[in-house]
Length: 326
Image 1: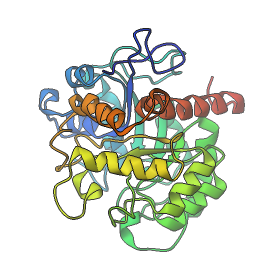
Image 2 (image 1 turned 135 degrees about the horizontal axis):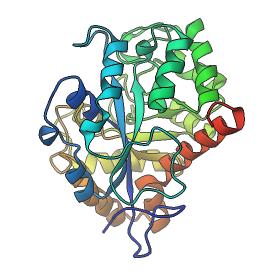
Image 3 (image 1 turned 45 degrees about the horizontal axis):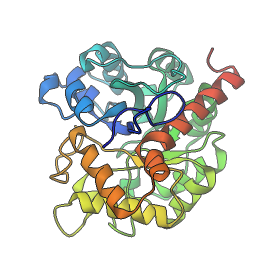
């Protein structure tokens, strides 16, 4: 059975593991849409029951939210962090992985920066985004989305932003980015890129999933892939099951992604999921399924959270060395 990690790794003295999740949309739900936390999938209680030590809370603003603009929605989410009822690290990460449910912040859709490096600097100083999805499902000042079918790469502001993201320790998240933008990021980013919530396109052919070539590139860059629990990304033929999640993890590991694969559930941002994974409470069952599949203890540690934790700490160390954070 699995629980939080401690010290430098993912395992407590009792041999139990922590879970880290690279993506959920709970912050928007509680801070912008005014949904009571107890009606959300990700709560302190479900995190504790699922043995989640670190949850990434995305600031998703969309093209125009209730507050009027993506930037205004982002400010509202920063001001609403306390509604999550868990500590959120907006300064340096702790040396040891937290042994109680905790969070970090990400940005889903760079339109919140309004094409301005100054705006990015303002929000980054307040929120400490650990990762930034350059687009959501529409074009913005930075790049083009995976769902749009365009073949253009990063825009000039996107290249400028990427350079400043590197300096400030914000990892480029390619989950919603089109392929040309993906390859630009792989070429230009100093920090290893990540796909916080994407699956295997050769198993489920949707534009939001990754091709084999993209997976290979993320392996080569030592980035991260968070497997998404959205049913439509897991199985094109019908409702997905926990076994489909395992199947995508298997496929990634067969390509050599053992050191970069983890979880990007998309809880509170999806409307269809495997019945066994309605919320973080399903993580122990998923880890047990992987164990039964034959994954070793060290492999399970990496998938559970070490792979994500490694990249987060690497990005922070890079920013400290570059003078981007104190």
